[in-house]
Image 1: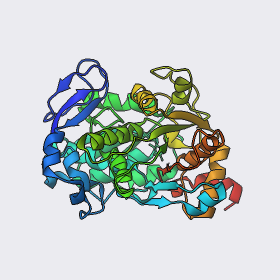
Image 2: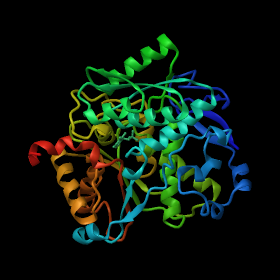
Image 3: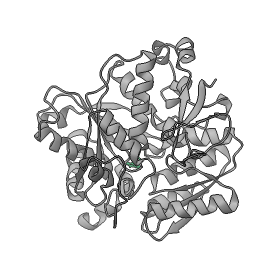
Length: 393
Ligand SMILES: *Cc1c(COP(=O)(O)O)cnc(C)c1O
């Protein structure tokens, strides 16, 4: 079933065979990218064939890495709605505003996309124990797919992670360890597990397949807009898998001849209290400096340093995009505005994209006639604790 040709290092171009398990590049230690034989894909499937398939991300199976579909672990993740935000658009005097609502994924966040593909692939390799450092959603998601496939999940989260995340992992049979510090410290603990017990490292971009799952957001944007792409995609960026993945998806679609339109300008949104990518972008750098004392309510954005920093910055540059930091207060206000107008209960990360939209529209960086997609990456339900104080419930 798989049309994967090989893996390639995103930095040094080192080529590796696809039928072995890999984490990072064996030469330079940078992330590996999965490449496909697109000529064969073009012969095997037409974009019209996709329309009749089940509404989950496996509808793009020819552009996913599984060898044998028996290994697929799925809760029907993906193919989330692309909602035309007409009422919100009216308030903002902007016609073509869309929200890709990732809160409708099985565990309530878009981490399910990456984990469905990566845990399935791990199972295909006969791997039995998975470890991941996480700000919350990745841990929950990995726990779910590991349970479904009968694999063991070991998850590391910062000590101050909201309790719902901890409970969701434990209830799915995972072993949870809470770590003093940030997700980067959790990553060090995970690396220790890998060295000590031979568990498989599922960290963002430290294995090649989560990005393959996340790129399906890009396929869906194209398909849901009638094989056209929006002018601008605004994405809340932590480790950057989603952004890098979507850009990869657009390239694949272009090379397949499935899309003719210009590729979107990609926008990274971060929190003012943790904005390494925004800072690097503004300084014109190719890599980011680790952020000190990261602080934001948006757990998915509390990523002081990521191994994919240079890939995010490369994507922003190639797409003629930009990066912008917003405050936590503005995120909380935006949650309310989206809820009032559209009935969607966003996570702060998702709300941050609206704040960024308003800034960019004000500067006329986004023009009136353009089509813009905001990403709501998870459900607001995960963040009920943020409201408890103010609402006194
Ligand atoms: C993980 C996460 C992000 C950041 O996603 P990346 O693709 O790693 O940049 C944004 N929002 C939420 C809710 C997340 O869980």
